[in-house]
Length: 142
Image (cartoon, rainbow, N blue to C red; front, side):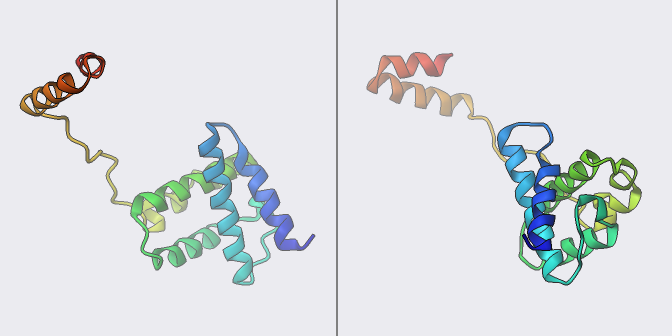
């Protein structure tokens, strides 16, 4: 195995941690992407224990050019910090230089964009559903 393959494999292993299956998959994909980028730039980071703040800052600087949302960057930063904690690098993961603000990926809002239906809209939908199927109308009332 090449050094890059070994590093990516080690990073994916550190990212497994705990959580739901999709969360683990997202963490592993982020680590795979970040280590692939670092090795492509010539950094020979052997594993998550070898990650430094400058590596992570460089990764996010490159990712900003891809036109992704700030929430994506924040999720990826959380994935990297969690992998660092998993290998015992709590102090580095929780340092002020690893915060979203320090990495230049702050300013996002987690508020949803969905709005509940008004009473008029609900009554209209209920009337349509009742005309199609009483069971659907009963489910809407729940």
